[in-house]
Each structure stands twice: as C-alpha cells, then as structure tokens.
Amino acid sequence: MAKTSSVEKNNRRRKLADQYAAKRKALKDIVMDQSKPMEERFRAQLKLSALPRNSAKIRIRNRCEVTGRPRAYYRKLKVSRIALRDLGNNGQIPGLVKSSW
Image 1 (tube, helix red, strand yellow):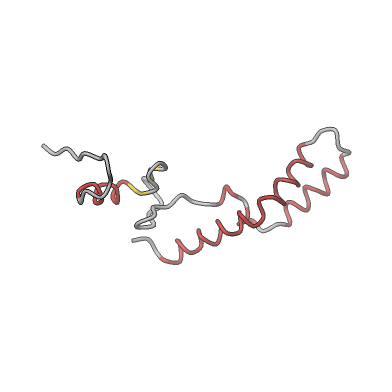
Image 2: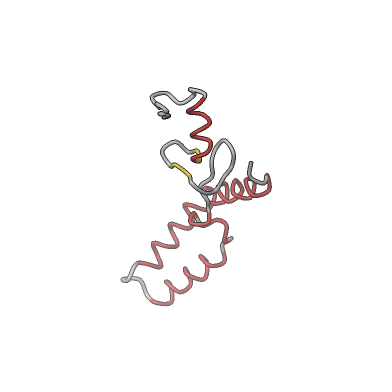
C-alpha cells in the first residue's frame, strides 16, 4: 500500500487541475496565438505562471485504484500489475484467464 500522504497529494492535484482547467486553456490559447501582440501574449504567460503549479495536468501521477502504487500501472484497468494479479487470482476481473504451468 502506498503512503496515504502521497495518494492524497495526488488527489489534491487532480482537484486543482479540474478547477483551473478552463482558465489554463484560455491563457494557453492566448500565448500560442501568433496573431496577438507580443505584450498581450507576455501578460498571459505571466498570468499562467502565477497559477498554482499543481494545477497543471502534467503533475498528476497515475496511481493504482486499489493500492495507490505509482509504477507498473495499466491505464485500461486503472490498477497496478500486482493488484491485477491478485484480483485475477480471485476471479474478480471478468474475462481475465490466469494461466499457470
């Protein structure tokens, strides 16, 4: 099991990213628009950098829903390889056939 503080920190980042998503997108559109004057784009860049760092979507770490493990994460199932193996052995994942020899 991952540290509770790490999992909670990641949850806070998700919440902040959702909260600031529209504002970040609007500012990024201004910054990337070459037709706008340089001063306006620079002001938008300063406003963008003034937003909280954890509001950037890139700061979110994919973690296992079961254990919170940050590595070996399957995006489709939202679990780590270890949790996938345990759930598969218990027959809790439909369609998964665990082979053993």
